[in-house]
Structures are given as C-alpha cells and as structure tokens.
Length: 206
Ligand code: TMP
Image 1 (cartoon, rainbow, N blue to C red):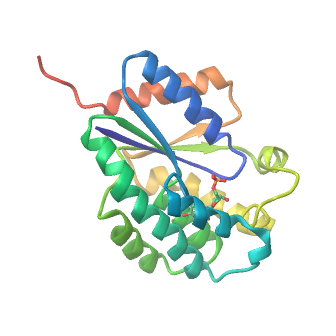
Image 2: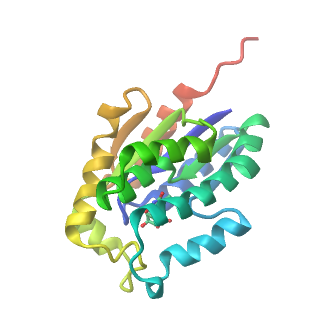
C-alpha cells in the first residue's frame, strides 16, 4: 500500500525509530512490515555478513554496490512487492538512496551506473516517502559501536560525503524525501514520522 524508507548516516537511530513507528501505526490498525537492507531474506543476511565483515577489507565501490543491489533485488521481489500488494505499509531501513550516498558520494562510483543498477534491482519501485534521519558527526560517532563494522570503519571524509548526500535528498527528490532531526526527542520523532506517513496513505472512498 505505502512504501516508506528510512535513510541517514550510521548511528542516526533509524532502527529504534522504525520500531516506534511500527508500534504506533499498528496501534492505529495498520498492517506494517518492517524490513532492513542489506538483509531480511536468507541470501540478504548472508551477503550482509560479508559486506560488514572487517576481515573482508577494502572493496571497489562498484563491487559493494553490486552486492548491496543483489540483496535489494531479492528483497523487492520476495518481500516488498508482495507486502505492498497485500495492503501493508512497508517500512524499510535503507534502500537505493544509501547506495547513492555510500558507494556514490562516499566511494566515488559513477552515479549514472548506480542509477541504472537501482532500476535493475528494484524494477523501478520508488518509495512514497523517504525519512532521512540526520545526526551530527559527533553524535553519529558516539552512537556507533565500539568495534566498528567494515562500513562503519570508513574515514571521516567519506562519512561527511555520505551525510551531505543524504541532506541533499529533499532538493534532489522534492515531495519524496524529508529530513528529520535524529537528535530530537524520540516520541516527537515518531509522531512527526507517523504524521508524514499518514499523509501518503491512499484514502479509501466509502
Ligand atoms: P545498517 O547499519 O544501517 O543496517 O546498514 C549497514 C551498512 O551498510 C551501513 O553502514 C550503510 C551501508 N550500506 C551501503 O553502504 N550501501 C547500501 O546500499 C546499503 C543498503 C547500506
């Protein structure tokens, strides 16, 4: 029914926000399917483990993009499209905007090639709403785990380019993307997110 993605730098608090949004929407009677990328399918979780394993070391950004996109293709076809068709709200933690931010802006992969890849992986499925949860680099660093995974271990300049890419999303995708302050009160963040989602739910005419 309605497709919502959550985006933002590492440590922004997307996963906690997703739990709060799901709970609130379900209490209003909506069916909500919460998923994450990479992951949420058997193959996606296994590829996630490879992508985040520090022992894998440096990868070319296009190699990374292909691996993330393989997870995305599987998830779109086996979980997201069926859930949308069944009338659920799909709440997805990261989608192709993350590939544009991390592998594109951060890693330097060609944006045109990444867009073509996004189209192939998703079959053109675009979110109705993208909530960009932003936090300052200091808060992001504090919230990241003490033992960073392979993606969290990227340097400061890389992470700054990633954040800039996310912050520019509302300009690049007006109407679809909005930025939320991930440092504000959790209840307020849930309420603001739910209000934006409700606006995008198609009305049933009695
Ligand atoms: P998560 O920590 O939000 O679950 O995401 C896993 C990591 O993978 C995070 O550091 C962001 C990164 N990532 C990309 O670099 N490209 C992508 O396309 C996606 C979906 C995630």
